[in-house]
Figure 1 (cartoon, rainbow, N blue to C red):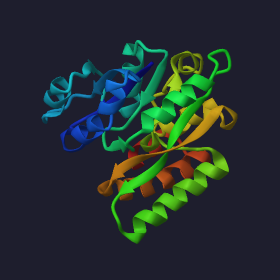
Figure 2: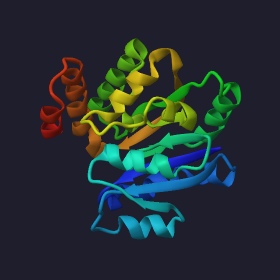
Figure 3: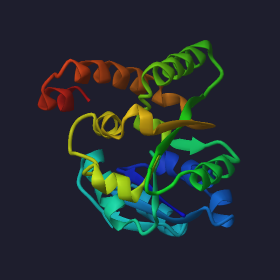
Length: 219
């Protein structure tokens, strides 16, 4: 059913947690393969990926090139793009399988998960609320919410482009009418809060058509 693509570069601190959230879906046959697209890690990322039984492909330094390389290697009809610092809620596969069963491949749709932060402070709840509002108003999830997309649609849209906001760029090409927000959460490590706020600002600058080279340096 689903090929999971995880872009990595020195992701040893978070990758195991990400893998753990895929175990149930793998046992149930919803996840058929996990692909780690690595941009030259020098830590234990590749060792962890190999121990988990993931298929490793070599990619460039940018996250967009890693996502594109992973998608090219994917063999399933559906691809789930998932950041290494993101873990999906238990039971996410049940909801994803129900979504897949209702989507006709001749009228493809994509899906993303609710954003969550693995922390208990008020700042985390405010960030979650802001992301929820953005997704409700604009149907604009970011890469740290996961993206489940038919491979056929992904290829038809030209896949990930090597740009500073590759996740926003692809979601915009998918379009709000073809995007479903699932109830299960994509829970990110607490230290990603600052990054999430930075990427929110970058998305605004991207919408204002700031040059890609400038966005890449800011990121």
